[in-house]
Length: 365
Ligand SMILES: [Zn+2]
Image 1 (cartoon, helix red, strand yellow):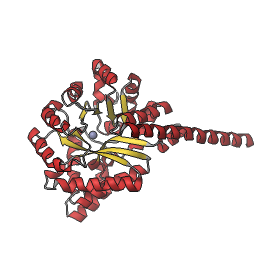
Image 2: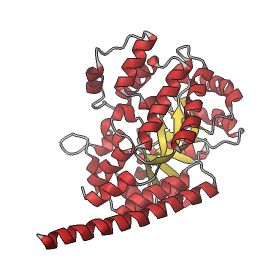
Image 3: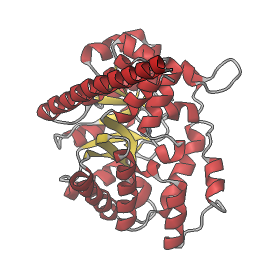
Image 4: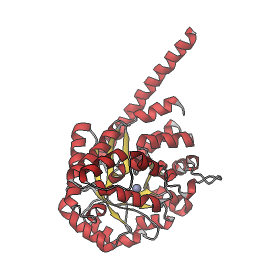
């Protein structure tokens, strides 16, 4: 791809809005924690894990691996280390703000206390803000394939920790578990005054996006790709400025149907991110589960920019969308737009210098 665009993407200050902290578990850390905690893994070594992580036959194949990986997380320090490893990684990719999901039911269901999970993650986020300069929000997600009663029970456990939780979400396999299943849970969540979001329109139909919007009253939709199948819905989402947290590499790794080419292979060139931007949707780029998809936010930007021939303006638009649909305050958003403006100006100066020195070199030859 164009080298100046690659440089621009790598150096750009970024905001990530769709990231499952449990999905950042790298095979190396999985093995180290399994050893520390005496957990038997279904893999003999790190290479076997990497082989299993190359691609997945949809969410139905991915989710069991994802939930299985969680078993190695046992102590508060494990959750701290997991979160800190993610923050250090994205620091190197110039992420300045991140809004991350955690799945308490994936832990409480196997006997790990709610406070062990949240205290470890929260402590790392605070240290990350102080030591790495990365601000963050923490979104508690409900597993939609579990019952409404289980979600209510989890919300009850979360109540003493509301000072550490910034919003609520809904994830795990969509099909058969429409947002309407959690209408009453989300009504209770909204009473805390915190924003709510939900995964919808990833594998589920556009109707799930409507339900997330109309029944759960989400302030943004996670994924939302299949909204494009319903022009009336797209029109509404554009009019409302509804954000979509799109995860390009995830779509390819999970071999989702809209991205399968004539040879039956997943192809990023078929991704509809550019169409979303052209329609005026507030789409953003995110990594979802980078430990399992081998792609953090920069790799997601690079992959989609190359496959769809995105311009620098497209990349800037995606970043501005992320600022606009984040949970940051209006003042903080203004500051982030300013940082981006400064970066664009600096990038122009650097490119001009590179071009002029290349010109001088050519003349000398
Ligand atoms: Zn997700």
